[in-house]
Length: 637
Image 1 (cartoon, rainbow, N blue to C red):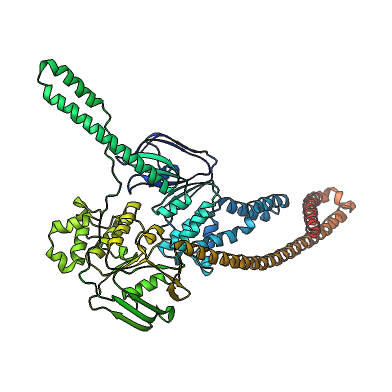
Image 2 (image 1 turned 90 degrees about the vertical axis):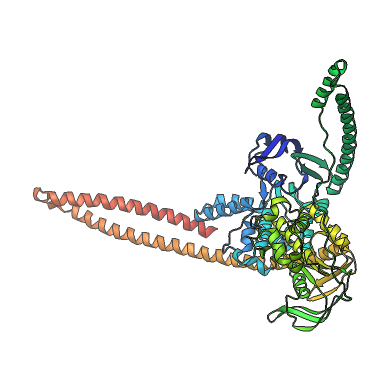
């Protein structure tokens, strides 16, 4: 049970959360929502112990095993699967204890540790880690690749897999669907539904939240309030509250207006002055009701294209790839104004490759491409965020990218345009280097829109965007009169925008006959088939590994017996030598003349040597007995 009591939380001088009180019970799955900057990540930092309350308290049972996704991942030579297995700290600690017990030849301790290892599923741990990697989009070949071989987005997935590997009681996730494709999102939501512990998660994907959580913590204007139900239920409850709040606000405003009117009319009259003062005091004591409002500060639209030729782009039997490797073949498409196409397909199937081909960034290996004379492509992809000039401001970017249109516009017109994407005031003059991922994504969307494209290509545009901006994007795309081709893991956006689904699979692109729910079923079936194959492969691998392990153990046993026998033989040789030396001394001591006055020095020397040899012989005999017992035990086992 997690208890927040009158909690207040600051970052610097800014009060993020004020006097929040709520309780989360064991096994609940909670989504944390609110505008960017309201304190969602700070709340997770508090639960991790990285922040302390400025007032009030937060309590959680000390024995809870907590897992979370690390923000950074060092580029090392460790393999992906070994890194993921490190997430189960108890498993790794037990493995180390087993190694120490083996080195100490402690059979009793080894038996206890192996029993514990089996109880925690240690013998299936590698298979469990492989399933996590596969579910998050990694191939079998990726399992043994070094961490340093993966890009930043894939390292994020590795951190997610490591967190899921931990057999935790409490799991904290901060925007886990960023950098995931739709298939990985579908897999992750299924995993989280079956997670037996308590889950607290920040997410900006409403359908993902609807399918995984049963409570919502909403943070707004310093207030944290908890709601029962998924995200859709929360929206319904909040809409009712806002409507009631607006009604109460309007009623209160009428009351305030009436009271202020009385004060203004009668304050100067002696007979009414006391009543006027009473009303002023009542107004001062009145708890003011804030007007109802909607969180979203975004309401934008894509600028209409100058021309809409028909068709815009025709692809005829094209193949495309990288170098000599063909990724997609026999692709044919006809894109016209008003087309709304979503690309579906498993990770690595070639969706982004197809987008690059449509954008003209990849030279086709074969086939024909026909562009309308007035075709103007607007292309949004994640790499474009990295290509922003970190020293330039949003306004400078717009002036440079906007060309002649921007040159003719006044600065105020450009600032008004940027304001629709959340850049207002002095923000338009600040360098974009320190901007968040969401701010950079909004800026790239603004730059794409300003170019008035008639073919809009969007490859995962919602990464880093919050719920309000995603909703604004969906509305803007619905109103956009030109063509849209979209890749996204946000199913709400896909449902709101796409009319046609195109499945990219096994090097081809074909119309998918069904909706997103049908695609989820198709994906799940394929996933189950592949997991069965992985299980079979792992079983075969484990069988082969067990044989290798038995051979290693037999070799180690032979080496151990051989070593013991060699040690015993050396000790027996030393004993024989000492016994021979001792017999020679005893023979010398048996001579009568050794006890005469002139033989006294020799006698003392012989007695001293006899004492030393007997002590050495006793030590070696003890060692011989100990090694002989070890050999007897090892032979018996």
